[in-house]
Amino acid sequence: MNLEGKRFLVTGGASGIGRAVVKKLVEKGARGLVMDCNAEKAEALLREVKPSVETPDAILFMYGDLTQSKDIQKATDLVREVYQGLDILVNCAAVTSDATSLPFDQLTDDEWEGHWKVNVLGTVRMCRVARQLMSENSGGNIVNISSVHASIPRNAASYSTTKAAIENLTSKLAIEWGGLGIRVNAVAPGWIRTEGVAWSFADEEAAAEALRSMTALKREGKPEEVAEAVLFLASPLAGYITGTVLRVDGGWLSV
Image (tube, rainbow, N blue to C red; front, top):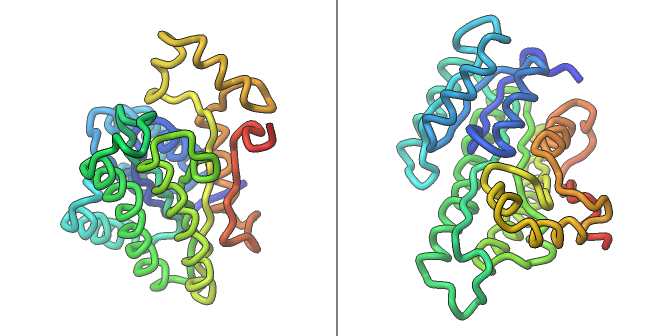
């Protein structure tokens, strides 16, 4: 797979699945912008990948808060100025919380608003950016990161609902923007071993083993495995695929 010359924007690209996506995109020849609210992790990522690119601006980082319109506009301006367009948007940024296992009646308005503002409205805002930039070219690809919790809501309702909304949004935008040459798809990861859930394996191995047993493959996934699915959907190999949700869950929904 060759993505030479393709321009990307990845939100939440400093760690976890987003980090793996950025590394894979750069490895395949793409260049672009990493947007995240964790500058330390983002700078560490850039130090790792920059030796493999030819020019300093091939991969850039921008601190960005998806709840702030000024940051969204700054990202739009930066992509247009530096890369003269956008081919691939990957919406990885999302928030969870300590309330992930709380029942509905114990979830506060703050909990709902926190998930909704970043997970859903953040994705909506970035999709607007993508449409604006991609329509100036000949189209492009949007890949939204959902979750198996959209289909089997074992997480808190406030989180699971946002992921279901993202899948619905993906289908709607695929219909509306297909004529513009913009494909919109989603990837729904299952139990993926990232920094955010590493504590589960270190301190609660029994719980982690129980989760592994819920998959057909009897193991947790790797961020790189999700990233490969994202790259496939963003590449010409998936040229006739839009409005779909590709589940990377080790067979979780099959068990």
